[in-house]
Amino acid sequence: MTWRPRRYSGGARYYDVLSLERPVYRPGRLAGIRALGLRPGHRVLDVGCGTGLNLPALRAGVGPDGSVVGVDASPQMLRQARARIRRAGWANVAVLAGDAANLPAPVRAYGLVDAVVFTYSLSVIDDWRRAWAQAVAMLRPGGRAAIVDLALPVGRWRVFSAAARLACFTGGSDPHRHPWTLLEQDTVDVSHQVLRGGHVHVVAGTRPDEHQRESGG
Image (tube, rainbow, N blue to C red):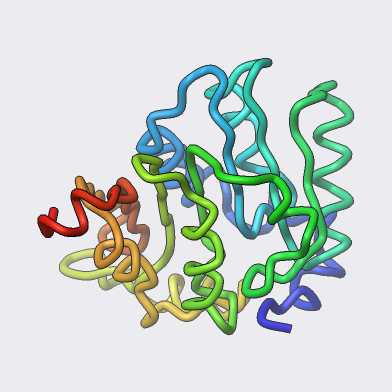
């Protein structure tokens, strides 16, 4: 497996509280989703969807005529995500079990999407480069991708480095990986927002079409 679900199994029920989502990580999550520029009718792939924290904002962006599919390797996290979907009554949102670096057939069958999002997941996935490649292969030319992930604080925010290291260790994240560099290499019209003193990076870009690739931008 290229994803480490055991770390998220026992505490899945309490993940949304214990992960410091609201005080620390939610602003980055919402900024990443805004950077996708979602419109009604869009189709979105959420890789490493976990308990479904992205789903309300993604569903609001695509509306009832769009669709959202999430993928995660942890059955316990997916159980929480499915409960979230049932409570909201979303008919156009689904989450599927699978390895992000080897997307299962039901996810690939979803077809080309208008947007792909990774929030706090690429720093946890072992084969993260392959996971990125698999997802971006499903993104249509002109579609948007966003990566929201972690690094260690810088500048005056370094006083929080110990807490950041603990949060990364607890969640299994590698704060030195900087997975958004893949997005910066593979997309155009890139935006890069830094939050929490460099602890949270929000990076988004557009998959180029063939003309843009040939012209170099």
